[in-house]
Image (cartoon, rainbow, N blue to C red; front, side, top):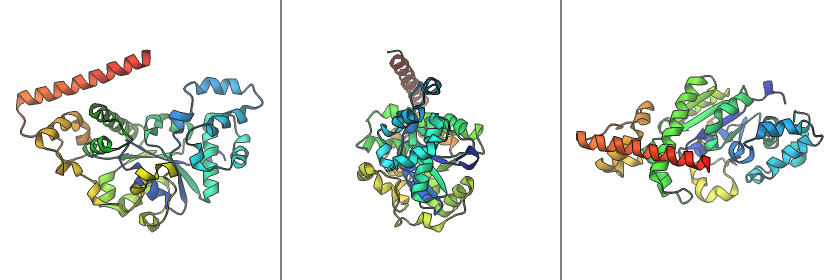
Length: 315
């Protein structure tokens, strides 16, 4: 289980961007298995993980203590791992969190009978630098969706908050990270727009397969083939995302937003909409006075976000 043999695939992206659909498509490849969401990097991995590793090197039970972090994490049960097999894979490696997560993914791969393994947790997008420093042969697929559809979807989702400004800032932040990763890790990170996947599924899936080192498998586009990427407790609101690609799920905002509403949201998202070649990102039928108001509003929203984030960190 050396790093030279370990080439995991990570699927990340803003919530409601199509990461579940991409994970299901990649999971249907005969050689690749994608785990349900692990949330490892922000739920399981402690903030002081480096100091914990230094302390554990002095203890004989280091491997058992690290495995406990995984077993006690909220999403561990979704993987249905054989604990003995996990320990067998981990015990011969260094007692580190990177080797622990590697053992988790490898155990899942072995149990699924796959050649390669991947993982999908949308907000692991924050940890791509860490992922690529841990696993130097990893590949990251960053899923992007038109922010206007993302925000509308989140505002209607039962599990998400209803703070429009927060959703807008999160989409801009994830888009900025995607652009930075593409620039800094061109051989390890690729981006797929949900809209391109929907309009040209075979071409985009073949491109993603080539990126991760696989040949295109026609079964990937067969929505009748079951997939395990959605945990049982999430099926009520995610299972639909694993089914047949539907062109009605893109550019929904065109039929829902008035010109005024479109100007409001474009003033917030316009820069990144343009960067990812989305249409109609400019303000329309908008006076100079209204443009100034909209952009001042955006700066005020962003300022409030920075201030609230600073105080939350200080408290």
